Amino acid sequence: MARIPSDDPAVKNSPPGTATVKASNSSKRSVKAVSADSTSPANAATSATSATATPARRPGRPTGAARGPEQRARLLDAALALFARQGIVETTLGEIAGEAGFTPAMMHYYFKTRDQLLDVLIDERFAPLRAGLGVPFQENPDDPVAAITQLTQRLVRVASDHPWFPPLWVREVISDGGLLRQRMQERFGDAHQKASLSSIARWQKEGRLNAGLEPALVFVTLLGLTILPLATLKLWRNDPLRRNVGGEEIARHAVALLVQGIGPKKAD
Image (cartoon, rainbow, N blue to C red; front, side, top):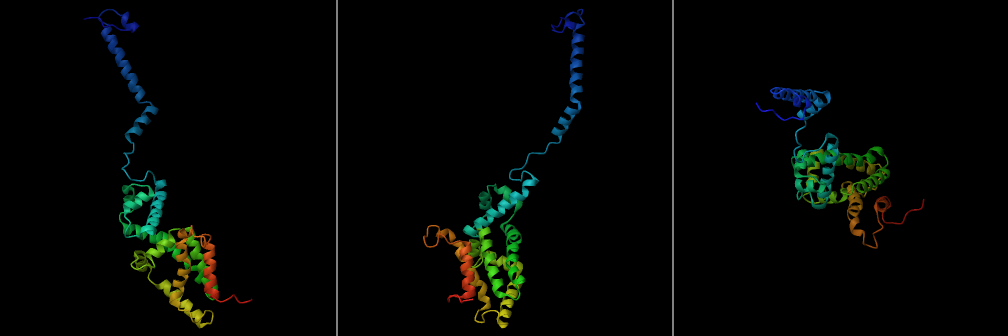
């Protein structure tokens, strides 16, 4: 058998015929070393990690549980902005995803339909605001001026904190065919409205409020004095007569008109 050339001194100096055996033994030792090294704690942990690695994330899914609420909130904010700008019926889930900077798959992960999204918006965004607007009447059961004044201020504050509120209210609540008004009516009914109208009628009977007021028009008038001007603020940026008018001025004007009318202020 031919001698196998080798750089291993043990192989070079071995008698003929033993080189192959020693080379084979050397190879076996190398294999055992590799096997022993692969079973070391560090490498075993690496192997276990590789074996249990999380499968590749599907496109569009959230990257982590911690980011889930943030991503969901961004989608709700984008929906409100688009609903206020172009209406609920005219807005698709894909457009909302694009507005938020997400893929349609991401949108579908959180909201399967527009109706589901609208229900969430009503529960999480509109219902708290609606409840807050009822507080002035609850806190001032015997002082209609204070109740209406505080309600006016709350409306302006809500509109200032949520820029989507005035245009969305005009488009979807006080306009004919507004989908949001219909859904809110289905969800909450008119018990809250009836209670407020009952308070106004009681104040009139007690002589605390102008008897010439029509109770059903008080809130419509209030909304007209606050929400409509707030919804058109952007149009006044280049208007030299109104560009300095903001929420504070609108609230003051509405309260003065409601409480004192258009006559001169009476002396104290």
